[in-house]
Length: 72
Image 1 (tube, rainbow, N blue to C red):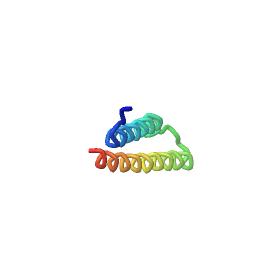
Image 2 (cartoon, helix red, strand yellow; image 1 turned 30 degrees about the horizontal axis):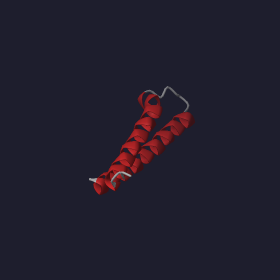
Image 3 (cartoon, one colour; image 1 turned 90 degrees about the horizontal axis):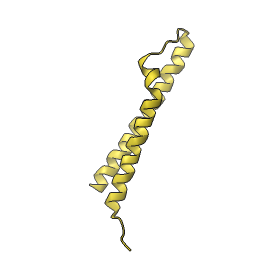
């Protein structure tokens, strides 16, 4: 039986994490580009939602970076 080297598995996981980052970006694109809300509380919620998305993306990118370093 042929085993896939661990390096390939780590790089595959890094690619998957980057895909999730892209999905988060896609989900929040319209909110980031044009928040049309005029209500201050609603605008605050939009900004908080964007901040959470950015934090999540940064965490995923950091994990992908580690996996790439380990797999490379």
